[in-house]
Every structure is written in structure tokens, then in C-alpha cells.
Picture 1 (cartoon, rainbow, N blue to C red):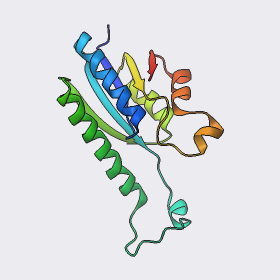
Picture 2 (picture 1 turned 180 degrees about the vertical axis):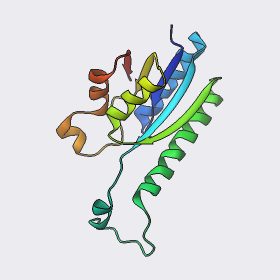
Picture 3 (picture 1 turned 135 degrees about the vertical axis):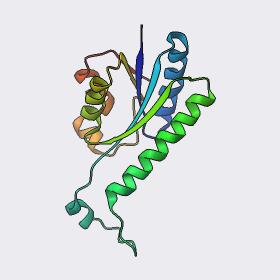
Length: 145
């Protein structure tokens, strides 16, 4: 029924709960488990307006990419430790909901699994949550945990 399951992770407790569920589903259907962490691109203008001024300035996108990579590696380790067999991990940048939905289309995912709340900021309260947007934009079933 589900050949490819996309699990969106962001390091939050809700994402971990969603990952646990996705691993269980994968075990029942022998699916491929695709783990994705999306980070938001920060422009040079946004970085220059930051109130945090480190002694050695870093590219904010590089820091966000590194964090996302760590989240994916942690999720992959957790999944394989809990019995997942066919696991691949990816990171991507962009608006989270649209990036998740487009990535699911590109990978021909049969199911998207994600947490109901993540580590987002106030923007999520003003514009609607990522999980809500994914459910309204996705062509495949979406399971919100």
C-alpha cells in the first residue's frame, strides 16, 4: 500500500513521535522511509540585521544546513535502531510546507508523516502551521501526529 513514506523532521518531540509511527508503518508495508529536514533560507540582509554578532561571522545558511544535517542523521540512526530497513535522509531549504510537498512529489511518496507542531516561530501562529499547510497542499495522504 505504501511504497515510499516521507517523514518530515525538525528535531522537535512531535517529529520524534511522527518518526516512531512512520517506522512502525514501514515495518508493516516494507516501505522505503525517506527522512527530510527543511531549513529556511536566510538572506544576507536578514543576517546583517541580526542582533547576534559573533566574533567570527558565519554564513547563517551554512549553520542552518549543518543543523538540519544533524537532525536527519539523528533521525536515521533512531529509525534503524528501531527496526527500519530502507532509510534515506535528505536536507533541503525553502518554505517548509511547500518544500515538503514538492519533495514528496519528486520522490513519489505515497504518504507524508509529520508532527503537529515543530520548532517554528511566531510566523506559524500568524500564517498557519506547517502541518496544516501540508495537509491542504499534498496530493498524497498526510498523517499528522
